[in-house]
Image: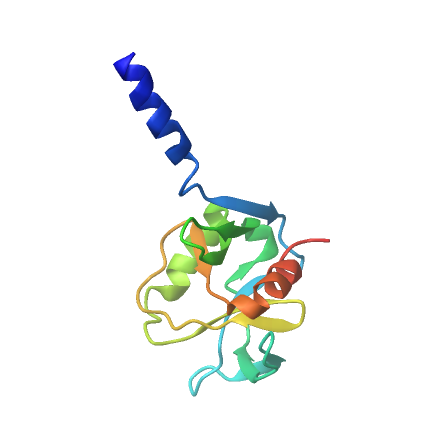
Amino acid sequence: MRWLAVVLVLVPACGVGVEQYREGPPASDLAIRLVADDAHPAETTLPRVGTEEPIAIAGGTIVDAAQIEHVRLLDAAEGQRVIVLVLRDEGRDRLREATTDATGRRLAIVAGGHVIAAPTVRNALTESEAYVSVPAEHLEAAFTSMIAR
């Protein structure tokens, strides 16, 4: 009977801290590109989602939709929400190659004619999951533009 009491105490706690998510296949125009700089001229300018701030995008694509397995909107236990790009092996390898010597450069995650996020590269990105931070008020719109409809 003593073990039963312990199990009953632990079972309700198991649901706490569980991450939940929604996911979908990538939109056909979802891509990871580089933000233009002095050494890499702009090919186009796109507005940032939610703010419409124009961001100059360099030519070429690092990772395109075919190299992304799916896009996930993750609701973490702590109340944080983040978009995760789950990359296929080719996408992971291309992102690693592009960011190995790109410390200080900015990436542009683009979809739906907008820049979803433009993080600065701190070190080579080598994982199969790329976490995309978007302000909470723009998260749903960003996720919707990043998945195929």
